[in-house]
Length: 562
Image: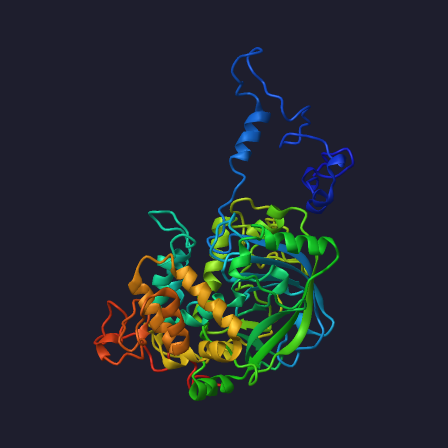
């Protein structure tokens, strides 16, 4: 082809460079229209005469207004309000005995981006809302992007994936009044009182950890169980922990009102701006398949259950590395609003487990990115992998395709063959131990679901923490308009501790149920019901296709064929 530029470059080689544009100062730029044509002043318009109507031919004005009308992309359905920054991760202690992932070799480093967030609120909501915090990390490894989509709590409100949209709807505004939970908490407590497995997360949320004092002063947890696979093909279950080097701090409910709506954003940005770079230790808990079976059989702790935790005395933390945030973004929209995290983004040596909520997130996260940002969201610079080889696949076209792989064949061609790397993980061996019939499944509330919440109340919360917890719960319940809901929730709390329930009764003035033995739930089967007719969730029958199972979804003895 002939050259089309004075410097000899072909026309297609001249384009706007992202890195150059990101670092350019306004003083070094020239004002132009979107097509690159210089324009004398951004406020000028074309009109008929000195006092006549505007002209449609005024492309500068039409283009300006048309683009302005489209400046917003849909906000995230969850985690809409967030902050973030860039930094790096470094492996300090090898994990090669457990994982063949290149990033876990000693001394390996990679750039990272972390986005912190609240969960339920809108983009403009308060940073100091009582809410879990998102803790999403993009590790740009030499083997591709590994996204860890974590939270600041080790558990969540649910373990059945189909409940997630229902739960999130209760965290949003009422469909008729358009009021949030701050003014009407009825939907919130209605859901919790019908899904008692949520009580562990409720204990955390309504406790001191419910409002962290900024994102620097909180830990992160994968929550979900995953798998690590080593070069011999052996695998273990794993959970990841991110421990703040700054320690943890919390804000009381009373003090939260005095904080800026952007308290966490301000704290993070200016800490980095002033060279006070926040850091976290990256650690893992691991257990063998056999240990997972024994944990269920002996202690009724389910490694696939997002409401359960692994006892650290039995499965101690093992430090792997550390990460720091040392670079603020240049443009919040380009680098934080458009950054996307996908738990299905794993690298060789890291695999998903059968955790059902994790399995559903493997689909839902990339699905929302394709809708919210666009099908080619991974071509955006903040999302693009940074690997030492030239990437290629057979994904083509779609809206806003920028890197469209040139003239290379868009099918598996023998004329112009693509290169392959030999498989490093035996997926049959790693995942092939699940063999069975298709079943319907809904989890069942059982006594073991109250063990960890009880330990929080009796062994972790001191007297002051207990008083604050009761104040936080009763204060939030004050906006619940249905006393039956409060009675049910106090009955759930009574399974945690009679002392807790009695204090709540005094604080709310509502006499709760004596427990859950005589209750039937909308969302969960009640394995603690005295009357067999109350065991099945509302609208269901035990007579045909009952969806509760003996193992409650856990890896019972004999599950793993390894």
